[in-house]
Image (cartoon, rainbow, N blue to C red; front, side):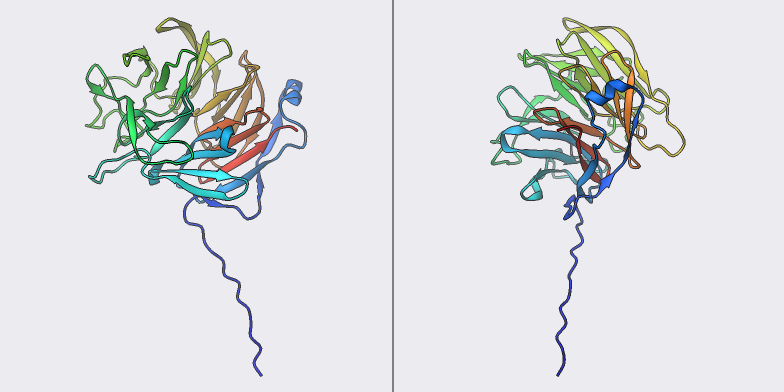
Length: 331
């Protein structure tokens, strides 16, 4: 009599797959005792999803206890929940055209407006847009919020933030263009700008001097703005004073030093209610105080692109190339 043998089938996750068990990654380096109030000694970063081509735009949505994030090359947004893990949330997310084109065409940065609508930086469609559907019933229907400056199309809006007036500030490097460079023949603006879309639809240039503007966030009080510059030649975070429709007194908040083997550049960032900065950059997540002092770093092997704080600001969600991480900083 032959014994029947059971077989174990292993399903290979091809795109942003949920982890069955959460593997921990990275090491935390502490440079200042002030970090102890932000990150507990036993804090660990765990992989909650993997298999992405290039994860970006992490956004925690407290109402639905879900994390949304872009997978830019696949033109998709994924959803992660504790109960169900990873699920496709929206496709297409950044390019709605019918003509096939090269480049990273999907959505990048994600955020919510004051009414709780999903707003996204759309690389392929070269605009800032709002999803014209409820968060719990997503559909690839979009309303354009800003698509050009004085008739010239944006290159590929990358990251964004709203101020308390409902005005939308966003960065526009060339990464979504086919050549991902200033030499791309499809690039229409003469610079890589930081813009503001007012509530009446008017678009103004705030900064035109940064080579690769990227992550963007306000400090509490909205009197200062922090912008990452993801240029290997100028890997800096820049701080600006806000005066009406202008940014003034631009200066270096911190200069990123990339040691051999470190992946990543200054990219997406978030600022908590105390003014602490969580910034993706060379080698992982840099944690600064509001004065620009580096308190510590979560060192990661793969390049980090963006992050999002939970509602209580005790958890940091991180897009980490092919991974998405949950960093429980404190209880």
